Image 1: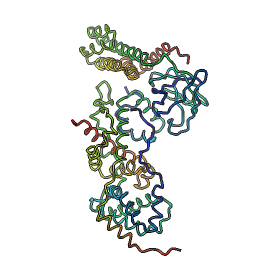
Image 2: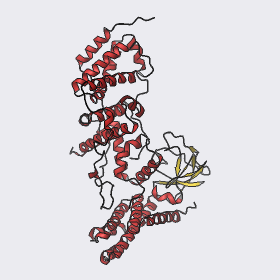
Image 3: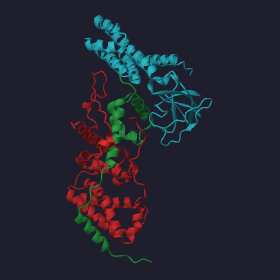
Image 4: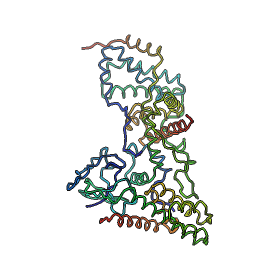
Length: 207
Length: 84
Length: 220
């Protein structure tokens, strides 16, 4: 089964700091087997399906082959072994920034929805007009939302701040919670699906 | 609305369980998802680790010299058991 | 700093690091005995202190322990390590002494959250805020902690922080992080459940961390 792995810079496991064997041209990386030892958590190698990517963003994205019986987890899959096939070159700091900015825009959209519903047209328009996270941050600071939309408004500001800091995974988290705040838990799932579709399209992923 | 997630306040109580590998799988999954996105909790975790490491390097206070001398004297004077 | 998997304290001793001492002790080697006492006296006292009412009584318990070690060294059967054996003698004597003093707080009763959470609720956002349960005042990053903790001043603050802990937390922290005993060993020695032992350890570490954080934030 083909899946994806995010690794820290240098091909290291983000939690374990395990140095993954990297592929060379024409040759996949060596198989890594879960030994239950220092390198992996609870006896399995972890990987992402495309739908799982937004939770795990890290410096490097790799396409990986999983071996053995694959078990689905909450937002990941687990397998007894895996090997890296190729680096997904499209993912890097620039792509992460574009994604973070997109998530900040989404959090803004959810805040605008809440403000419109609350009849706070002026505050909504000010946010709607923003085109960058910096503008969103400024608009949120200056805005006076009604109480019913206050938290969604705050969340839009938080997402913008995190996007400005390049923290893509946090901006994505905030956007997902902003969606839920405004439209309930189903909207959170839909927001995460939007995020993975964005990544899948941007990175031209098959799986 | 409550979500199936672990937030910072909960992780702050679980950091040692995490370091000991003592979390049940279901909790560990939630902790890992949280740590993947929370730099503050990663900092906290690192500080708990650094604290444990610093504690491990704390030199032991030596016993008072007269105490040590008295104990060594008792050792010297102990009745020796017959050896085969 | 990325999270790690279960790390070991770097000074964790191999299970039988003291084995070489046993032969020397049986041969009457005084410097070996002096080394043993010097090595463990302070830790034994910290553990004893969790059972008895004063430092002075803890000191007596530890001295009685060493006398028992002297008396028993030839008969020690090596079913456990020398270190474990010494600690077991200490705990038994401390418990007896604690009972004679009618000291009321045994270890087992400390399973409840008497002490409150390791990190106060004040540090986190509340219901009604945007992110309930998330850090409101997040921990400030520590720059180069290993190097900064090497200074004499830092070490003194650390020693004070440990000394300021409740006795039980000091005992568990000392056994786990200073002596490198693992969780099952500490549970066996102190008759604690795995969960209780870990809660106590975490509270101890969290308090010391907070003290160190305050130290790092003081103007240089």
